[in-house]
Every structure is written in C-alpha cells, then in structure tokens.
Image (cartoon, rainbow, N blue to C red; front, side, top):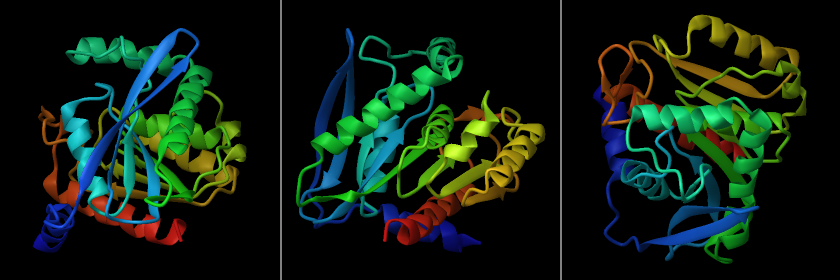
Length: 257
C-alpha cells in the first residue's frame, strides 16, 4: 500500500538538475485583466502544455506549489486565473461567491477558461513546449471548469478532473466532446453525491465519449489538497492523492503521444 505514496513522492521530488522557471501570463477580456502563472523546466524540450484551473480559491501559493510539482513530472503547467486580478478570495465565503458567478453562467465559465487556454498557448516558449500537445486539468471548482471546456468542444489531448463538480445544465452538450476524459473522484464526496455521479456517467455514455471514472474509497472532496481539513467533507487523503497523480500521468502518457 505504500507503493503509490512512494512513487508519487519520487515523482514530486525536486530534480537537482531541473531549472524550473515561472512566467507571469496576462490577458484581458473587455475591461477585465487576468494574471496566470506558467511553470516549466527550461532545460527540457517539447514539454506538453497543461492548463490547470485551481479550486475555488483561485490562484494561490498552494495551487502554484501544486502546479510546480506537476511540472516536475514533465509538463509545462499554467495555473490559470479565471476570476480576474481583482478577485482573490480570502476565505471560503468569498471563494463561494466568486465561483458561483461562473457556475451560474456556464457560457461565461467556458469563455473564461478558453481565454486562459488561448493565453497559455500564445505564451509557451517555442522549443521548450510542444504546442501540439495540450491538455487541461482542474481541481474541485477547476475540475468542473475543465469539464465544461470539454463540453464546449475544445480540441484537447486530454482533460482530467480531480474531485471536481460533475453537474452541467445542458447534458446534451457532451455530444461536443472530442477529447478523452479522466475523472478522479472521492467515493464519499458529500459535495458531489452519487446522484451527480450517475447523471455524469449517463451523460458521457449517451454522448459516446472516451471517458474514464475512478472512485477512491474513503476519500471525500479536496483529497489532493493538504490544506483541506473539514473532516468527512473536504479533507486531504494522501493515498488517494498519490494514486490520482500517477493515474493522471499514465493517462497523459497515452493521450499526449
């Protein structure tokens, strides 16, 4: 049982030869400015580009740490700002308000996420990054956001949702999906109940999409987040977290090649 934890630790260990760099990526939509962060090892070539939409707290140091760890696995990762620079939640109430603005308007959510994707593709350095290998991942709120991007029909090499929201107001939109999907879910997540899981599976099946759904026993919401401490609701689960990153990497080994 220690295998996955040890493997993930090895994958996330800082490579002494790595030259991890961070770049600020800005773009605007109308009068709203957005500021994302791209991280990658500038000593490597032809890295896949991965858009990472964080949880409902938006761009934070915790999410940037996660982006850097994933980048160390062999990706160029952009922690995306889909709120705008004027929105940086300081607590759960502010985060809920910010996330609700987008969750209640899926067209807006999709346009914000797509704009971040386009900003990433426009700013990745040639040579270091292979512009033909582009994927998207998201955590909690961000998982729901990248699934909406897929439902919008965005051509990607893969989409991965970590403990993300699965609901959508227009299930028929799944017919637009043209990318493989991997959902990594906490089996006893109270915020994404079994009824939502069933509806998602029916949606994906009806649309004949290429999808996988992995349910981690004993895990609740936010199982990859070490700062999550709501017992039985949103809580870090080291074993599920380690396994989920291994599964993401395996999934991308197939879809990005």
